[in-house]
Structures are given as C-alpha cells and as structure tokens.
Image (tube, rainbow, N blue to C red; front, side):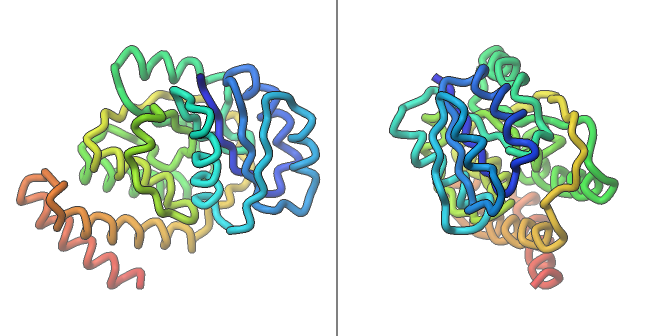
Length: 243
C-alpha cells in the first residue's frame, strides 16, 4: 500500500492536475491544507481515495508531519511525499518505487534535472553539497520535496521541522538511523515561482547547523574525526553568520 501526503496552500490552479495523476499511482491521498483562502480544498474533495486534513499550524513541515501521523493508521508500506504545485509528476511514483526495490533502499529522493530559477539552482547545489559531505549520500537535489520512504523507516525518525527544513531533516534523520538513501531523476514540467524564499533558506541553514552540531556530539554519530572537526567548525561559523 502506498499513501501520498500532499501539503497544500492556495493551489486551486494546480491541485486538480496533481490529484488526477496521483490517485492513479497510490492507494490513498492525504491532503493537508494550511487553511487555503482559495478553492483548493473544495477541488480536492471531488476526488476519490482522498482524505482532507486542515492544519492550523503554518508551514510545510507541520503539514507533512500531520499527514504522516494520519497516514500511519492505514499502515502503508510506502509513504510518498509530494508537493501540490504541479512541479513534480506523480507518474514518476511507480518508477521511484521500482528503483527503490531494485536497489534494496529505504528511501528514494527525486532529482530534478531542471530548476525554477538560477537562485534556486545555486542554493540546491550549495545545500546538497553539505548534505552529501555530512551524510555520505550521493544526492544532488536534497530540496526536491518528492521523496518515497518505507513507512517502517519513517517511524524511526523524530521529525520536528515546521517548514521547508523538513526535506533536509528527512535525509539527516535517515543518516542517523543508518538507512540506505538513493536518488532517482524525475520530471519537473512546471516552472512557476517557488514559495521558497530567502528567509526559508536561512531557516534551512540554521536547522542544518544545529542538527549537525547536536549529532556530532552524540553517540549516534559514526563520522570520522576529521569530518566531525570540519563540520563543527563550519556549522558554528554558519550560526554566527545566519543568527
């Protein structure tokens, strides 16, 4: 069983396209809406195999964590994390699951081969380099927002993110739990403006730095000594810069 959790906020222009494809690729869709002021919820209600959850707390992280909580009661084998803006194609879901199984992996991250803007491309390259260095995972797009994870593995994670940091946290928590994470190239047909702003990039940086510092000093961290020293230095520097 596969369940897709889709956070939405004012996506009336895109949600029908996403839902038309998603309900064919998964067993159930859970829409977690951040109190949209448009017609997003009413449009989503028209589709079968769909559960609507209204989340009063703002932020993508809160929406996804709420969606995961609701989805767990159905005991799916796979949890699909998908955006409601139409940038990613739900038709890639079965391909990603097949790739995950073929590689005996625990989580697959969608790798977009196109970006919405030069700024987003630069930040993705920057963030993904740090993720690769810190975790050892060969991931080129840590902020794609299109991931599939085994539910049993998701349950081992202690997610606390409120906003866009959730995408980074999933990968970091996977490393902490020694999960196998791989990537898969996905379609990215839509190039509308992103909701990821400069303040969100700052929040992601701060979250990463704090998480790494905490992990580096815990008994769970098995990184070599030189990597711990390097990460400690630059994460502390990052906190000074972005405070």
